[in-house]
Image 1 (cartoon, helix red, strand yellow):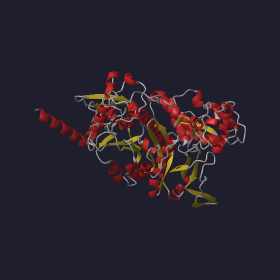
Image 2 (cartoon, one colour):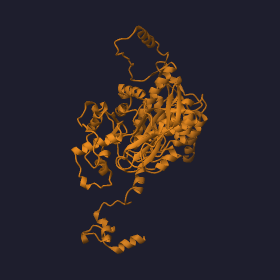
Image 3 (tube, rainbow, N blue to C red):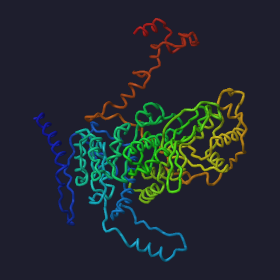
Image 4 (cartoon, rainbow, N blue to C red):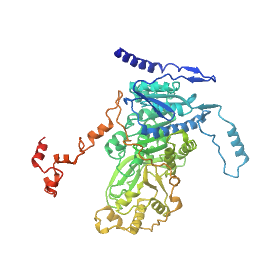
Length: 619
């Protein structure tokens, strides 16, 4: 019977989900005598197979579980970062990870003078190879315990099990029972049931239950739809000492300054709508993580923070230390942003000074600006607090970059990972936020200087400068705003603007009324062009497809709330029924005729019938 058949199917899924967490996977011997997992999962009616990386995911055609193919770069980068994290952590436990397609790394000493003691030490270290090797798809007793708190279809967790070596277990959790059942089927379909366990619980409660030191996870991955703030408190407690937190935020509109009050309620920081908003979003989430970790005498160490497309992704390690937590205040800063010219200044929240073996902590002094901007006379906006220290660990980023570039066939987005990480390694570590060349020139209404010429002018003036992965035409520099505007004044003399058209109260008029304090040199220097730009790496990828941004939110019980195209047509189009024939415009009143300014007369394509206009108002 149809009714009983459907009931038996649901019951079998629920039964499998329960038994998969308590039973061991079934194995059979292959021709070589090795154990081989037996995936015996078939496609159900309406299901399709989505392939990404080494994983093949069963995906309902009804779109009952959320899946976004544009996030492949996110998942590839996460696999690469966790692999390097496992390489470092497991080396301390005497385990060597083996990555498919990766050649043995050979370290060559470039120094000619090496004493015998160092040579013997290197030879000794090289001979002591770890006794245990961990390969992908194999369970490692001393390996990493990974949790994906919001797993949806389980694609990310399956890829961890198939592509990241040195894992002890992977827990793929989702609050939806349909999603949890699908995760269990996908684990069996890919033959990783011995590594991956499906869980159907509230993510926060699951992490709160694992707060004990022996129960904590080595890696916690959170990729929610929107803000992750409701899970951060549990995550900083459930991650092990020196463990890795992987956090994704897709509420960029809030973090980029559209709703500063909402950003404060979620992250404890006021966002500003400025050109550097994408990097500021990274620093806002790092501030929020550090603040939550400090409650439990823990602190964070950022490994990699990237802002790409419509989301941001941060990878941080979490440590425990009461003495180090005291440094937190000096790592946070308020931002004073001029609404006229865009110049910004940072005000540290605290100050620390070294007093011999002791560190003295005191309140910061300020503000760094006056009531009005010294360059244009406009007011300042106050944003933050934000994380003001480095957002990357360049040594770790270089390891990930070397691994990806040395094994490009491992990921489908290897070229983009190489381009983004190359830009990250070129960024100035100690310079928060950035300017954009087009915004500087727009402020004084002049032609935009070429990027290399503007960078060269800063280098000639004795300042450091770099690009930013968060914005295509960004300029990160340690030059003060006064030096930047002096360079722009020199550029305006070469490309003059019509001063008579400038308002005396405008920022452009006040900036150009001051003579530059030095003569800028715009001769292009060789070091003005970074290597990532010279090599034409894929730094900023074009949109892969139409409507490639965030998809519609998934329902709590499974399923998508509404088709994205229908939603866009309902709320964003000016008219519900699009007009394809110009003759239909006669049904709409002419606004200029009502104001008495229409000059088309009877030839006007809109209606001049006032009675029709009044009838529409009544309706």
